[in-house]
Length: 322
Image 1 (cartoon, rainbow, N blue to C red):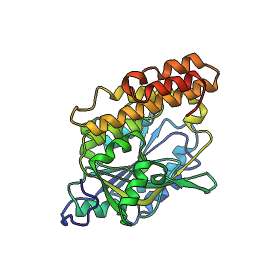
Image 2 (cartoon, rainbow, N blue to C red):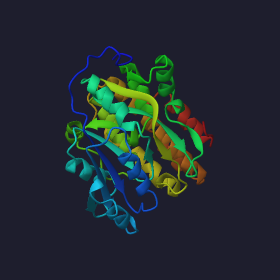
Image 3 (spheres, rainbow, N blue to C red):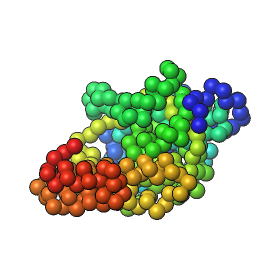
Image 4 (spheres, rainbow, N blue to C red):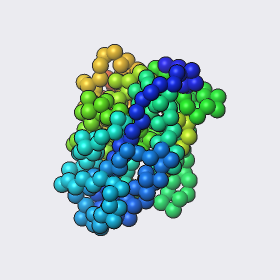
């Protein structure tokens, strides 16, 4: 894959976006999230809000927006099922996502739509975003927080549009930048992949992203913040870190038999991601004083990552965080 899209020939291609927002009990922030989508310089074809069994004032907030949005009301089945319901109901050629407590910057869809119009060979697109506290304080940027993101920014020579090369995919899978709210994917691709997996408390987005990488050759990256991800103290990971980290390991384990043999870099990245997930679980167990359970959590690394696995086991057995 090349570095950027400057040499791509202009093409005729639909840039209709369906934006899907899954929400449960998000009355305090859902209006802000929807407003950031309705305020896009490239207007979406539709905004689909999937209410996943809210028990607060969310339905009343949504009802005030009338025909500006499409609301799907579902029993509480989790964020994956909610997003999948939105995908099934969508009409746009491309699908983008937003969480109910985050926001798009006004140019988020335009950055991707203009690139899609110029380059019909893009399999999916992602981009940079900002981490902020609920009060707006900037914590950092996504691409700068990962080695592959920093490498892409250095290699871009100041260009805001860049393509991930095949050698970038392992690092991207192991420690990706971007997130659900910067992802733009053809609806057809999402349907073919089966959408988001259900049954995982966390890492459902990473599960889909890894399968998407395995099915892709040209990944467009916008090195400009497209959205804001707000860090909350009551997130699922912080409320129950043991359950969340166990779910993350289970999600990565679930992928091991799903990736094609030809996706060598993606498979290598998954091994690294799984190793990290097991380590994070072990750290949580260590924090609870459960050293034996922590060691058991990283023992599989001896097989899946034999070069690093022994060090993982020794450090956890000693009770040391690396």
